[in-house]
Amino acid sequence: LLQPNVYPGNCWAFKGHQGQVVIRLSARVYLTAITVQHITKDASPSGTINSAPRDIAVFGVDADREEETFLGMFSYNMEGDPLQTFPLKNMLLPRAFSQVKLIVKSNWGNPWYTCIYRVKVHGKME
Image 1 (cartoon, helix red, strand yellow):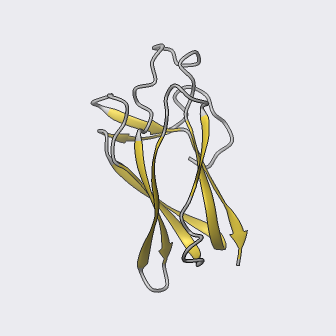
Image 2: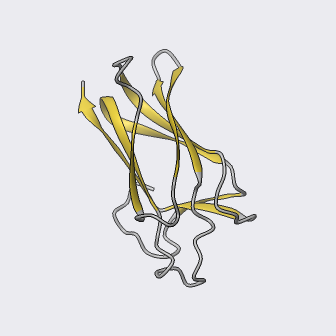
């Protein structure tokens, strides 16, 4: 999920079309955007990428207080660029977070599993 190598099969996979992951950050960060990456259809051995995430919710997590703050919901476009960046709604409530939680609500139709190849978190350290 956080590794630089992006090739078919080298992904964070979970069973079904819904899942979640919490990423601990190295420092508290004022989050501004998140980038999600999947492989292209051309790179896929099956010629399809229906295991790509579709609808994703993002939360900032304050581990000290065990609080979660909703930062946005977005849709990964499997017809778009494999590397897609989405701005987060942390501007109205500027807070630094120690963790980021991604909740995948759906994928593009694969009934068995969902894959995310890479996630990048953007922001400014506290």
